[in-house]
Amino acid sequence: MIGQMNRRHGFLLAGLVSLLGSASGKPPLLTPPEVPLMGEMDPYLLKTLYAEKNKDTGLEEIVGEKRFQELVKKWNVKLFGGPILGCVTDESAKVWVRTPGPASVQVVGEGFKSEVIKTTAEKDFTGIMNLGGLKPLTSYSYDVLVNGESVYGGEKPEFRTFPKREQKARFHVGFGGCARYNSPKEGIWNVVASYDPLAFLFLGDNVYMDVPEHRTQQRVHYYRRQLRPEFQNLTRATAIYSIYDDHDLGKNDTSGGPKPFKPDWKYASWKVFKENWNNPAYGQEPERPGCWYNFSIGDVDFFMLDGRYYRDFKKGTMMGPDQKAWLLDKLGKSKATFKVIACGTLWTKDADKGGKDSWWGVKEEREEIFSLIDEKKLGGVILLSSDRHRTDVYKIERPKGYDIYEFETGKITNIHTHNTNKKALFSYNKGNFFGLLDFDLTKKDPEVTFKCVTLENKTVYDLTLKRSQLESR
Image: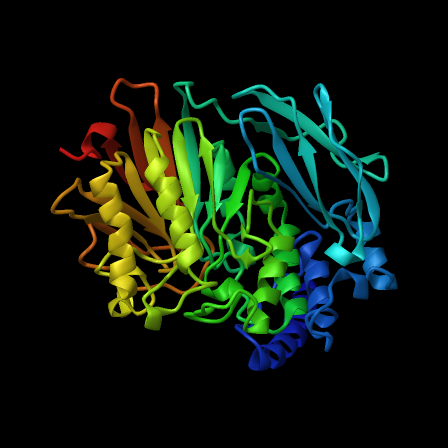
């Protein structure tokens, strides 16, 4: 009987999703009916909001419906997304949440509490709370109160603040992209969390939407991922930083163009992205919206780049003039032991498609960045990227400076696989995986070790770089 019900469930939803997919992006991958909460919530969301004719709405369309309220009550859903920890420093942090309807929310912890915020339909029932007065490199447990009721009870999550710049710390940072919602693969978030990283960097194609003119469907994609307990297990304890790539902002190989608010879909997609993450900044808003920003973990500086919003390869730019000026200024002034520059697409000249969707397609702008590193003798630079459904390691040789290493990984939960690249130092595409950076600043010659870790929690490759290797002679 159960098998018959599961098959019936599959047939009904397959027909629905096939129909929806024909008019939008890739059809959503279905959650098996036996999965707690999402086995019931997922088909409900797809049948209602995903099929909604209003292309710019969200939870407000269904919060009053009987079936929605039944599911929320049955599964005791106090948060419809989050917490997502972000904007962490050595003395502060921010916590993002979404509630299943209007609510008062507060974060409380050991010796601290946030302001009470109200979640409303205007922001799709999301809100961000500030935590201050914290100590460096310290663990804190916390709870979220929704309308005064505890979300976690006796099993409260913990997070750690970042070290001060002068502290000689050792810590992990995870990263990767290409993470289409895929129920059998969602356990990888638990594997990431098991390494207790201080931060995780989402480098684009974070949920795969391909529906730039349908914000309602975009929001449904986010709900599905944010409701997974494995994802919540990671985001409530690890500082999350995100940028988008083509399948988040627009469609495959999207180039947004030079204008801040045109085309209309670009700015509207950006607003949905901003609604669903907890980043320190989103470009230089309000005049120059986008998704570029920098942050630091101890003596490591991170530069997160937006390679889509202002991209115009005919004019030779990945970033647009404002972002480029910002990057050259901030990177040029960095004195950090390691400097990490992250983007959603490949940096190497050996990229796929002959460089038509990578930094090799804007050689002069790419060279401006690399020449700055050479001329200012900016030591300790490494590059991160995603987009290709595999893990690659490249060594970019520089005639007047040190060789720069690039680490690309882009198949966290995807099914689709790209062929390995024979020109890479290492190229791997079996199964699913993420990247892990182990920074050890306690050593006389500080090190960073890159690891490729699989869904099965196996390290299939590692490479250690000493700071002394990343210096101009």
